Length: 233
Ligand SMILES: *Cc1c(COP(=O)(O)O)cnc(C)c1O
Image 1: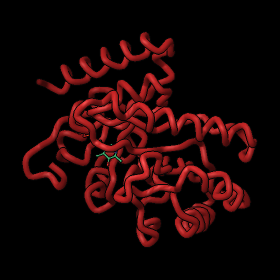
Image 2: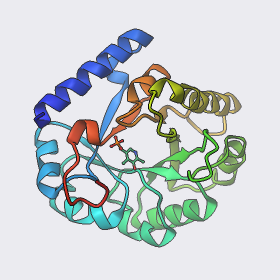
Image 3: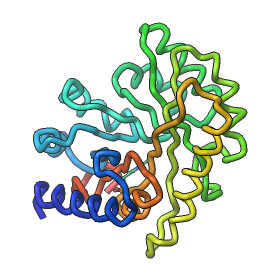
């Protein structure tokens, strides 16, 4: 399948999921995850009008960002080591993987030194798998309180990853759970503005995630493909 055909196919699936769940198509945004593909393919993705690019490791993203950083909007979606903050700050508009205080401190400090505000999502481990990063759901409100004085860091939503399931329907409780955590946090009014974003859903399960309220889906293999020899293929 060509890139164009994959984009069309994904769009149809997103529209159908929106219709099933009574959502507006424009409330669901797509992040094209380019970690499995080359620099050239990343350029093609941008040229096809996909604006949001997601990468999960700076080492893999660097060459792509240097080539195309001024085109599109970049999302850091992977686990972020504190000593890598200096590399990604100011380049990736959104950090989807904030899950510990030391990282929040470093993001705030480096953003302050650039005179910018960094937009983040709290990664929450809804499934409870030990292999997954993220705050426990019950830690989220105290974490938000702890970072509320960080003036250069803004939390705009939550992110989670579901376990890989053959039957994507089995991921529904994870996505519903993230939405419930967000609604619960918004009920406590811990942030100046309500948390709007839910970053959830990947190639295997994005339709279920949309039905459960995803505002960002992070799509790699189904949308941009996987290429031989890439780091994660
Ligand atoms: C790789 C990755 C994705 C995309 O994976 P696909 O299953 O290929 O869509 C989404 N989110 C994160 C955090 C990733 O690391």
